[in-house]
Length: 305
Image (cartoon, rainbow, N blue to C red; front, side, top):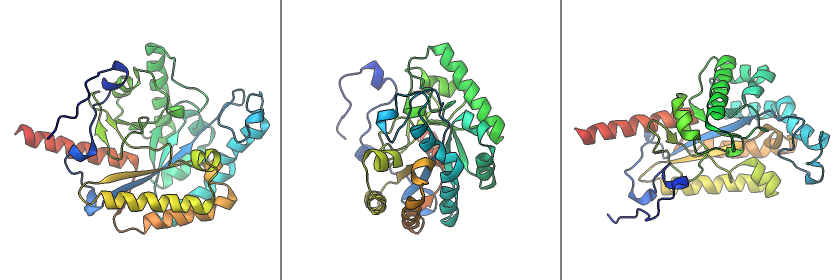
């Protein structure tokens, strides 16, 4: 096997994970012989009214307050979430909730709905207006501990995974996540399979910034039918590539975007494609991480023996 290890070892990159071309890896197997592990990353978020954030109309985004964009985002927990819930239920899909701890406190009805359906809960920061970048190590340690504690309190389940607000981190974040007892992080969207980070006990699990309704509908201005086509194309390609080794298909959704009334039929069509496919494992990010960790641990034990 050729040595494809890069010669440079820049600490900002190579100290976290190794370069691993997918063609050189041992086969990855999913339960039941499935080829593709599919999960919905449902972002349940709270935005501060006194800070600019994700916007649909940039002209007013710098204003405080900004009723146009804040109200658009706030449509999610009030209306959009419940449409998405209908669609997920209709197709038997359990969500992996990217939960801001303040959203869990402010929107208990959303948490209750997820608990009734045995959803997974992924820690997603305090709110989507507070980023980790620039935090000092001890400040970040306290911040992470507070977020994990608050989510565990409102869901009665300690989160196993982490997604940073806007996928932001410091160079200390992965180590501090492992120290806090988390198993995986979704921030590094560089793969179609889980992989072990150089931080002991911590996995990188696939997430997506392209198969993400904000970037598709708001940034890319795609239509509903185009969204369905994109999901179909992604699924077809991953199934074809996974004949010998499984892949992960994450679909990142935000209720204030995909939960608009005129988009629900297209979410239903997309979920029907995936849920009806015989080679798909409908699962959660928690279950993907646990299955991969157990399988690679067994492989290591066997190799050592």
